[in-house]
Length: 326
Image 1 (cartoon, one colour):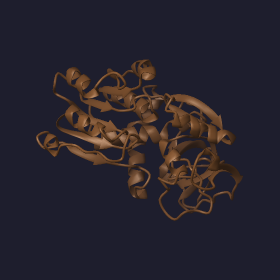
Image 2 (cartoon, rainbow, N blue to C red):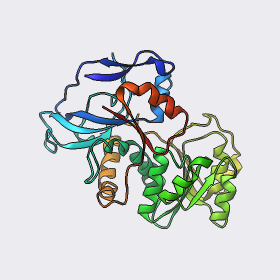
Image 3 (cartoon, one colour):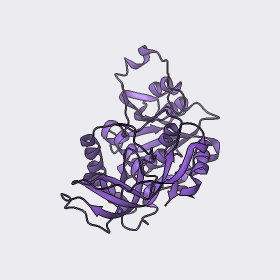
Image 4 (cartoon, helix red, strand yellow):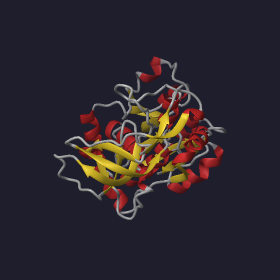
């Protein structure tokens, strides 16, 4: 099968589309014929050697954290799925290939009314946003959230999830993306190039602050995130696009009795991933069926143009997901 292989660590030139062995399903696994995969910031980090997939390094290092497609084969103990089923899901790596193998309880059915090749834009960002905002951040109806990088995949998913919950959401983004975030339904959009988001949030909440902050930036955002929180609020850190080191006054955290939570999906034990996956299926998947949620797709690249997809994502110009068509 064809797959993107990281031949060494470095620039986009290290990505090569090669023929590699096809995966084989274990007793509780399935093999999916991939229709599309999708880019994530983790792919750029993995390419330069900063974010390897968990476990021993494989013979062929294939990136890709999410996919959509059709089941080609099922293991001997699989009973809930059949060949031909349209599915999507997340994996720890390997989705930038014509086939991927995964545990049966990590599968998600493709929602009604969504094309199989478009469904690859759903799993990673909607699961990440749901896990961070709802499961760990405890966002509920009537609550308020602040999400950074509002036009990113996770950001566009967060806006929709908050709306579906009956919560309010503020997002930050650059000037060129303000209108897109408003059109998705964000209650407050802060152009971080022109305004201090903590001051904007303070005005928006009449000094009360937000219940949860979802941050993918890090660095000097942390101090302002604390300022933006309400008493007993939660900051869920899911990335460090800005800077991996942050300094802040502990004295600002204590009176708010706030929580700072670091999280990733990729390296969790399979049992925890299955739990997050099943929560997503039960709580969010019906929202796609009724149209409350939808994938936001910025652009598509064929597998052979994977280097161009990496270069484009590095510009931060995308609004929503960048898909890779198999």
